[in-house]
Length: 214
Image 1 (tube, rainbow, N blue to C red):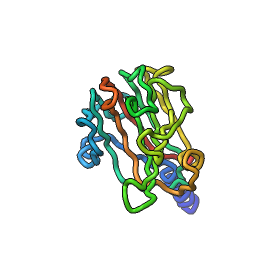
Image 2 (image 1 turned 90 degrees about the horizontal axis):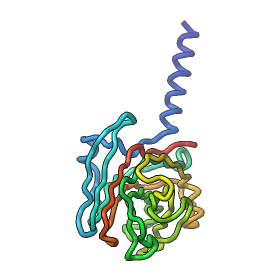
Image 3 (image 1 turned 45 degrees about the vertical axis):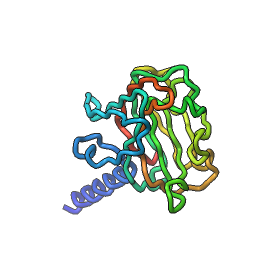
Image 4 (image 1 turned 60 degrees about the vertical axis):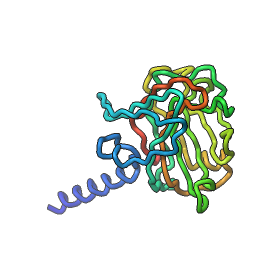
């Protein structure tokens, strides 16, 4: 009996450790979809459609000459789970635009991680993990609209067009490297597909987005 209880205890402890090592941000269910916050609309709202495949739920985004985001306030402890994991796909990209210019600052898919650093939204710092249509993985630059948001290429259609890709980034390290600040937690996560500057059409998909210990 004691042996059984010991096994039960350690099984429970191990399951809690596993739970602590993974924090899911988006479920992409009907219930969640109704609660997500719609961000600022740029010349219209991105069309979002829920779907599923053998790997689980996803959300499809379509935008032509417009853009908007979906997000949620969520406190992520970067000391415990510093890595963001993203599974996404771009079916139709924005080839030919200059992404670090105001006229070309559009992405078929992007995931924002946001840290509140003041009393207003304008004081927030952000890293904008993007699925680029024109640049190589690893490239990064400040947004042409605000230096408080850094665009960082995690995937590129130059290598993976219309293909599901899973990527990972250390958010804690990236805030230090890109913003020069020590961040112990983040305050929110958002997805966005926008083409309001380029006037082109983009189609993309977001599936698994979660934080992990490694």
